Length: 195
Image (tube, rainbow, N blue to C red):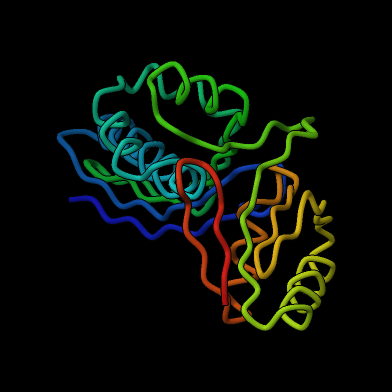
């Protein structure tokens, strides 16, 4: 038996991490703990990295990758509320993901992603449609400013704007615009935003 409850942490900053509550049984407590840690690692990687990669390709890759190889994507693990019985194990597990190792792993396996580098000043391109002209553009800039995200305008043509934003803030930006009633889609790694 295995149950998971996942909570994401740091998805908007540079440090990628997530938490799960596990409850696993097996023939021994030691095997239950090993199984719980392996399943927790896969679940955390899936939940956190799916914000930065094509979800179906990511989950397919997770299924094909050995547990030993996935350990290399984790920087640290914190276990709390641990309970062990004769054949059971339960705990709250938090894992911090190595951004650069995760990005390399995804790239090497052909999974399109935008996992941020911890010390990167990389930017991503965004196509923005402002139906209401300057009013929409001002609102979008206000949304970005409220999240401390700098929008670098590349070009404006009619109601279409091409801009660049810091790659490290892609998820934070999309969450902020969605919360403000805007829509977005990813088109081959290029973000398209409209209201």
